[in-house]
Length: 373
Image: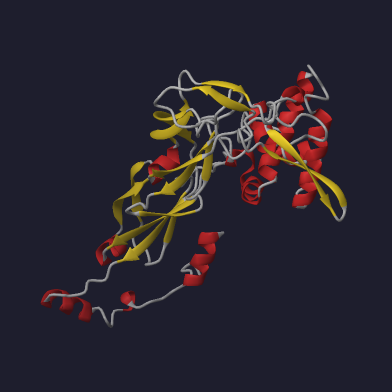
C-alpha cells in the first residue's frame, strides 16, 4: 500500500502551499542523490518526496487526492496525476529549479553529480470520449498520437557556450550590489549540447514527427474532465540526456440515452400506465451492466423511487459502487375515447379512486431528501 503523501512530507492536511513546498525542499535536500551517493534507500525516499510534492503542490491535484486518495491518480496503465513511477530524470526536469538557479540546495540540479541539466520535452494533451458503460467497467483505449522524437542518426556535441551545463551565469551591478543570476543557455536552450550532425528529414533541433499508437488503461469510476497522465509519451527533447514529456489524457463523458449520472449514482426515469400502476407490472430497464427486469407492485404511486443497490458507477477509490435510482412516473393519457372517458367519469365519485395519502406516502421533499441521503 502506498504511503500517505502528507505523511511522506511530514505535514498535515491543513498545511499551506508554502509549508508544503518548504517541507518538500527539506526532504529533497536530505535525500538528494548527490548527498547520499549509492544509497538506494535515500534515492527511494527522494522519489517518494517528489511524487508527494507533484500532487500536494498542485491545488487541483491536491483536491482530488483529498477526496479520492491514491486512486484518483493510480491508473492501471502506469499513469496518474502523481509521479506514479517517476524516474530521476522526471524529477530533476520538473523540480530542478524549485530552489532557484536550477540546483538542489547546492547540489547538481540537472542530474547526478552536479552535471548536465536535464531538459524535458513538452507535454501533449488529448481528449478521450467514454460511454457510461466504459466508465462503469474501466476500458483500454488505443489512440494515435503524433509526437516529436529525436531523428535516427542525430549526434550532439557539448555546447561551447555553457560547456555542457545548460546554464549561463550573469553578474549585474545594481544599487544593492553585484547580483548573480542563472538562466538557461540561449545557444542550446538548456540542453547542454548542440547538434553535430542530423539527417535531412530532421528539423533544426534534430527532431522528426512520428505517429505512435499508445495504449491507455482507464480505471473504472473516472469523471468528466478528469485528467490522467501517461508518462514519457509526450514530445521528446533534443540532447543525449533529455527526457520525453507526458501525454495528458482528458476524460469526456458521453451522455447516456436513458441514464443520468450523479457522482456514483445513476438515475433512470421509468414511465408506466394507469393500468400498470393499479395492477402492478414487470418492466425491463437499462443499466450499465445490461438490461434488468424489475417488479412494480400494485398501487405504486407516481414519484416512487426504487433503489437498486450497487448498480451504479464503481468508486474510483474502490469503496464499492453507487446505486441505480429508478423514478416511477405514471403516464397520464392526453386524449380519451368515449368509453374511456365514461369509465373515468364513473370513477370520480368512487372512494377507492380518491386520494388518501398516509405517512408511508412520502412528500416530494421527503423523496428528494431520501434520494440524496
